Structures are given as C-alpha cells and as structure tokens.
View (tube, one colour):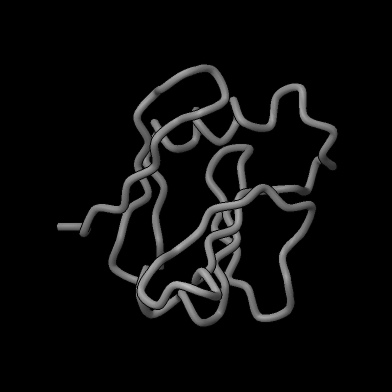
Length: 94
C-alpha cells in the first residue's frame, strides 16, 4: 500500500487550506487517460468507487484502482515550492 511521508502530509494539508473542499476531501492519484505510464494528481471531494484510501494524520489520498499495483511499494513525498504548488515525488520503499 502507498505510504505518505511527513512532507507529503504537510504539502497536502497546505493545498487544502483556503480551498472550498469538504472535510473528507483528499488528493487523488490516477493514471492520466491520454498518456500511458503517466499519473496525475488532483484534489477531489471524495474517493471514486474502487479507490484505495490512504490516511495519515488528517489527510487522505485516494489511489485509483488501476494505479494501486503501480504504487503498492511506493512512498509519496513532497518538496515545497511556490505557495500551493509543491512538487510530489514517488520513491520506492526500502
């Protein structure tokens, strides 16, 4: 199962500040429809059917069903960028 680093938790929390999103909202990772092998990250109000829900502290990440095998041994990390624009990175867990 995908894990979240502390930096990712902070970045996701920062993205949600000031946004008009419900308390149950989260970040969703899914394959990009028109680009094979590419994932996209979006803010969404709730998970879609079949999504795996990863929770840490007060943030949630929804992993699309068809992305679960790709992310199963990964950790989501983040580097700060401009306010509201962190850079997310996937690392293989040791």
